[in-house]
Each structure stands twice: as structure tokens, then as C-alpha cells.
Length: 284
Image (cartoon, rainbow, N blue to C red):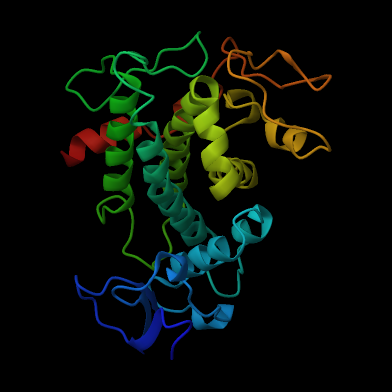
């Protein structure tokens, strides 16, 4: 089966020379040498086709490919097909995967000289736990270390089950800890590289989807959110746009105000959360 000469549908076989999107016993992959405009020009498959260990992840990717702006549809789990915990896990894997594209855009602007510390607002400096003792890292190194550690945990059978297997209820603590750390990456880009944030978000809507997942699954309590919780709602208003670099989260925007992160608010759930840093250290 072919679509614009770019896609083949064939028997699955995991080969390093034929990476692709696996759906049950079939594989969708791009033809070697196909034009860039035909990349991932795959046929849209019904949800029922997405069975097997990678079914949930493949379906999430198809929904993103169809319309990345439709975050509610992308995040909606069909409980007749997938466990809710598995759905959360595959979404976290997808967010971590897509964040690598944001890192590429940051390489020339988020340098050691320009961002010597990992900050969101100017009030907080985050210490990097990828070292024997937590210490300050420049922002780009902190981001890289966080993604490396997160990827290791998300793909570790020691802490999470094999692909396609519903995670145990206690995995919720892992999800919350991962979400808090990934949220810091978005927050740094939001406050310090708004032009990159806008460029990436206009195409991928990744932060909007991530915040929707946070709200849906209560990964982070509202008062702990660093990115203004009403930012995307305000952006969607008629005539709205991004606020300019240099404005603080509490500054006026289009006659309204952001709901800003309150650093003085106590961390009520701190004792309940799993320390992802300790997991990463145990794995190393």
C-alpha cells in the first residue's frame, strides 16, 4: 500500500535500517529517499488498529500528526482500549521525545554565557541533580541532564513495566516527579526565550498539551505551576498574542493579568512525591 509514493505497509520487523511506526502486525515507514514534504504521509488508521505494546503511543502520535492543536482530543483516553495509567505513561514519553526538538532550537540562544543558571522566574535557581551533590548548571546543561535522566526512568523496567503493560498505581508518584521537572524546562524557555517558545509552540502545541495533561491528571498542583495557568486561554482570545520578552508573569497583558506562580506558597504535597533524582542516582 502506498500514499504519494512515501509510505509502505508491510509485515513488521524491527530493523535499524527500517525505523517506523508499528501498528499490530504491520509497519508504517517512510520510503528511503522520499521528499521531505512526503515524510510521515501515512494513511490514517482507525483507533481499533492500534493494538499491541506500542498501540497507545502510536495512536497518540497519529492524533498529533493529524492536528497538534487539538490537545483535548489528543489527551482523551479510550478506556475501552487502554489503561489510564498506561495512557499517562505514553504521553510523558511523547512529551520527553518532542522536547528534544525544542532543545535543538535553544542551542544558539541558551548558551552558558547567556543563561549561566537554570531559572524560570528571577526568584528561583534550580540545582541539577545529575551530579554526586546537587549543584548549579547552566540552563542548557540542566535541560539536557533532566531529559537524559527522565528518559532513563521512562524506559527502565526497574521502575516502570514493559511497553504496553499498565503501570501499578504507585507509578503516579513517578509521573508527578517527572512532570515537575519537565515543567521547569518549559518555564525557562517561556520566561527567558519567548521567541523560541512562540516559534516551537505555534507548530507543535507541546506546552499547551503538557499543561492540559497536568490539569487532567493532577500531576502538579495549580499553585505550583510556574507557567501562568491562563496563558493559553488568553492567547486564544480574539486579537491576543504573546507578551513580549522582558514582561513579568504578573504584568498586564491585553488588559488582563496572569495567574502567577507563588514561590512563598508551601509545598503541601512534597512528602507525598517520589524523588526522581534518587531514582536516577540508583540507576547510575
